[in-house]
Image 1: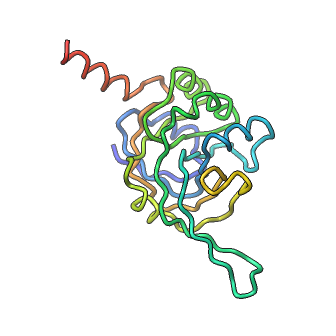
Image 2 (image 1 turned 90 degrees about the vertical axis):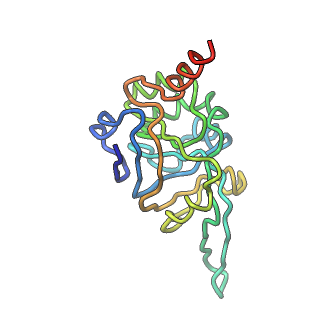
Length: 190
């Protein structure tokens, strides 16, 4: 099934998603990688994570100053998924803060899968190598948080329209597309 969903995502929508569904998001999403996850756990989040979507990504950003250097505009040049397994040590605790979805590449571990079920959230797979394509769905950079971590590790607050395609790979019912595909592949080999 192909779905267009607005963020923050409502619980009932998360419950209806199943592995294999194709999703396009509109609204606000946040990038966050290892350093941001750790800081969220240690210091709290700079944004409200209730119903929020975190994208495991380290964007390439062009910064433009106005003529008086009083404000900056940011343009996403490219934003592609980072391998999500790097966030395994932090993700269950971050999910508990209210996330509805995680976007990344490669899936996550059993602890994260359990947290998705316990807290009604999903994992959405983004296609690696599509960073330029995904950046076209970004309407604007709303804000940047924790820029002291560096551009790739900062939390970028993005307004997106039809951001995707994203595939539901781990759902709120404990189903895992990576495991299903892996098991089928293994049975063909044996």
